[in-house]
Image (tube, rainbow, N blue to C red; front, side, top):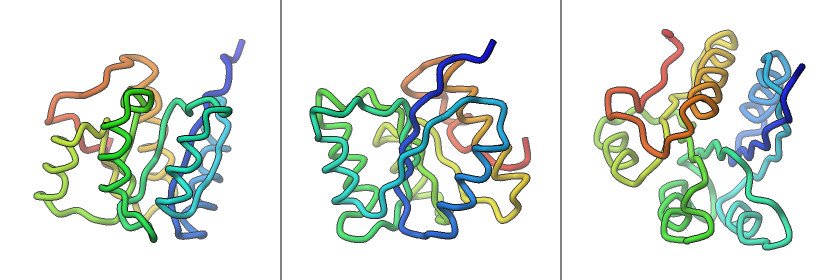
Length: 150
């Protein structure tokens, strides 16, 4: 018996990346429901609508227009109603200083967007399994970055 679908929110302005993410989710053995927003302001408006349930997980790109991912993450973590939202950074950036900043800023995990579709499926699936299984707000630093080399 399959469990209830988990609501995922993807904040990414790259339409091709959004389509690949959506396709990867369809191939996973986890029931999900995906909502996509394309910029930081749209993300924060969506999250601040009191009539909508807060998604279980937010996959957040760093390079969003109007309000970048770091600003959104800081705003989310400063909001009492949103601070428990699982935020997974999903970006092409791989700078160590940025990864360390994101860890200190209470992101749940960091995924560097993989080039291969099979790796994309692996990292998304792994992140969702880890969040569902452990349901912890912050992993150990050595487990913060999720790569396609699982």
